[in-house]
Image (cartoon, rainbow over all chains, first blue to last red; front, side):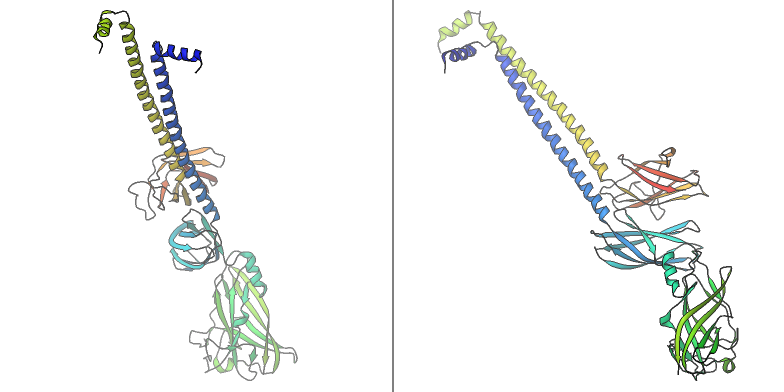
Length: 333
Length: 167
């Protein structure tokens, strides 16, 4: 150690006048370091906790946004005060989803209700759902809106099976309010004076016996594309007419009422199809509005190809209705 | 021990006062330092506690989330029904205040006496929504024109949730 430093050190040791100041300063510095460090570490740990909470919240938000449940093919059917909601739920998202409630609103009455669902969907799962809720004084022609609520707080609106544009496309095959199901076109032979044979199955309608008395069954659906969801009633003038282009002959079958046993009723009761309702309509009689058994039975009477047209008349809502549905061909032999 | 030195120390008083004063000063400094240490520790502890409370409240607020399942305004009875679900990750979410505002943000009504009911129309005993719990409240005597409005729910922890509706 150099001489001057040794001197200073000895002087410091011998002179105790500044000793308390040194102790005080050292103490204070230690206190400052200790407290500063502890507060800093504490703040750091708290900030870490907060950041962790923020990160968790962000993850939840990401999961919530990734939830992609779709409710398709929605359909409502009403029976008295009960509304049955049919839907196909598809989880198109990347996270599992839990559906808790289905809310159904009758917008005509401003009434609403909900039904617990409690359904879990993995990504890619497709699940049909049927829920029945009670809405007092509801009606099939009312407008319903519904949505599912997920446990993450998202809502999944139910998309109707037949939106207006789809209805127009569906009706294109029938050109008008009623659509005919080609697959279900069939004819019946008679088992008795009034009874139809093999009812309600009948026979495939495209090869028809020419020499037998037959009746036709046609499946029709009311797709009223106006958006007003009106019921459609067919009056007694509705008929099927068959035209043989090679010989220029036409044959007519008037609309009739048939009971559940396949018995043609003597008097026709107007057939009403509610909006989106599908029903089989029968044509059997030679007379308008009545059927007297043997005298009113009709047969094609000729062989060869024939075109069949549905000539439908009646009312839709409070308006008059008339429609001619072509395109069916049969072969009589 | 050299008794002569002790005797000399006792008899020679000139340096005694300096030694005593040094001892007293050092002792005083140490005592004051401990007092300062204790005080600063108390203050830092209070600060830590305060900071912790603020931080915990912030974290709790972050965990809160309310989903509006349905908001329905009954025009004939002048009441608004708000159906909620606690889809957050924290229990005991209370509804402290509800504001009904117009679509331009003008406050129409403020409700602070909120009575939470469950979906079976039974009053919720603890008046809060736990995780996944559903409930609704009714805002009565609320006259609204057929227009667009917003309902703002303020929870007891201070979170706010908004939902627009048409009266």
